[in-house]
Length: 180
Image (cartoon, rainbow, N blue to C red; front, side):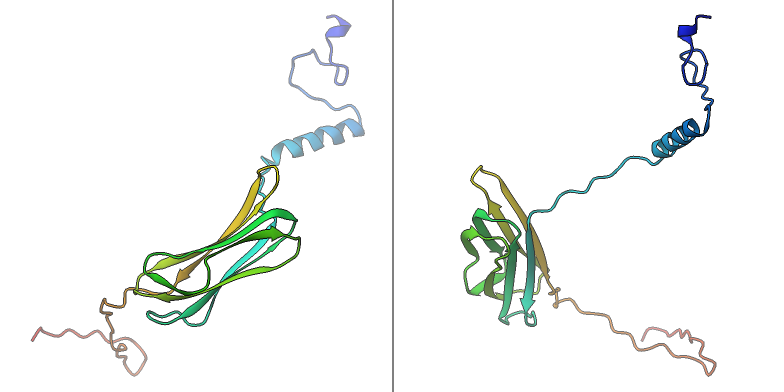
């Protein structure tokens, strides 16, 4: 066997997968390689837009009652364009305020957009608030929040049962009755 065909670190023929570390440093390197190979894939998270956004109610939400909705946004960078918008679903009336604002953004400067709404029906629906930063190169970055109107279908009857009867020892009593 030619000397050039041997692996310089373990003196095995090239192409053989047997690894015999020669010394402590080599063993540490091989061990570290094995640990790193077994860690698995690294998962990256999606970067968030450089703007803090919140959307909240200012009062109790009920059908036919006025309630305020406030979208607040604080950009973390300066931007040439900054827009806030609140999207109302069908069945929600805009009583007061504007649903859109646009201007420029200064880093750390908080902006708020407040509207007064009146839900018209007891239906589940969602209000969405969006904040978008626009830059001179055409790049736009934004974030959105959603608020579910806590209104259900109140027209459906609900089943109310009396509390179950219990024996003196606390066990539930099962009663069977004939239909009248």
